[in-house]
Image (cartoon, rainbow, N blue to C red):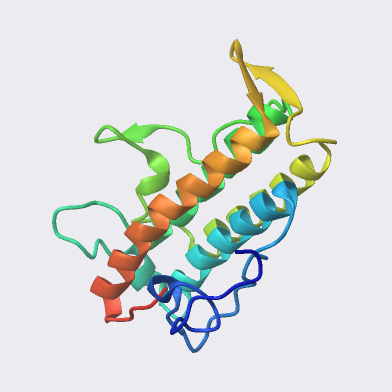
Length: 188
């Protein structure tokens, strides 16, 4: 079936994944790239999705607990993403002695989710910088199958990239709901 297309489907592929967003600046991953390019481009696509979900909102909207049964906020998700990037790429893969970005817990949850007094510009700056550093760490590995040992567990670059795609995809689902509840904006 190589090269064939499904009759009646939009040019972009499966209709369940084909919704146009007017201000969508994301770069879509190639459908024919090798493993490394696929994983890194899907991760960048997920990163760009979180950024897109936050675009155009005020600081107060980014801090808004938009769903009554949840303490999640869009800014909390951005701060969490920065922490996860830092821990997997810099601490686990690169063996850097990094400290938590937002140490401590309150009400049993990580401090990164407590955004009432958080600086929005700082949070986005830190997240973007952690993404840049994560890309550099990933690029330093010769192969997806290269491994490191962290905390007595052997992990590969392939595992970390795959896990990070899963991490962002799950939280981007949360971001979808938070954004819609905040200002009614919907879309992929």
